[in-house]
Image (cartoon, rainbow, N blue to C red; front, side):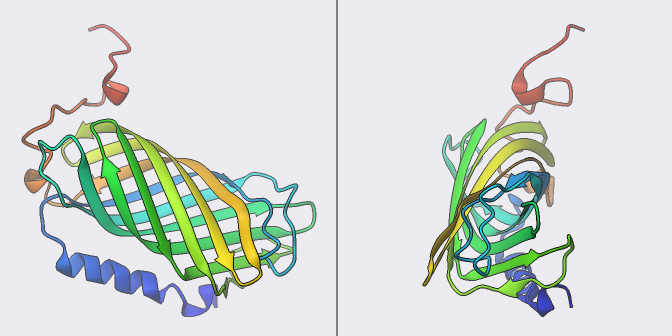
Length: 214
């Protein structure tokens, strides 16, 4: 069974945030890009993807803006799940981590970090989403993003993530990394704390920079 039903903690995290978050500034993010892992023998059952090839990376977040719209530094909190894949000549590797997530956001940049023991890994001869195994340990992760505020209820970003896992056998990968395009969707955008206080870029001005004339 895919993930052996161990995706359930993510479902509970989503429900918890949905029930406890305020309506204003609550948003969902999802991203897709490329990822790579190397130096992961301590978590991939002794396999060592040092010559790892590029794979696909994804993430999924539910976050709440805890600050006011006029604050230059804004703090966001919620839950974030990341998925990394990579491969060597003979094996396909996968890593999923889920953690509470704290983000500091400025008008164009944001930084975030999290840590949690919710980790699953996969090391198989074929690609797929099966046979993920729960891995005992602690995941540490970090992010940096460049934000494009398109409209009050939709933002885009270019984001980089890094993740490593500490286990009793050691740490690895060193680290897992991904870079991706992220889409942010606000719930009840009229109550988004940014909506009344920040000028939005619109679709014609990526990251606020005009690239063609009228």
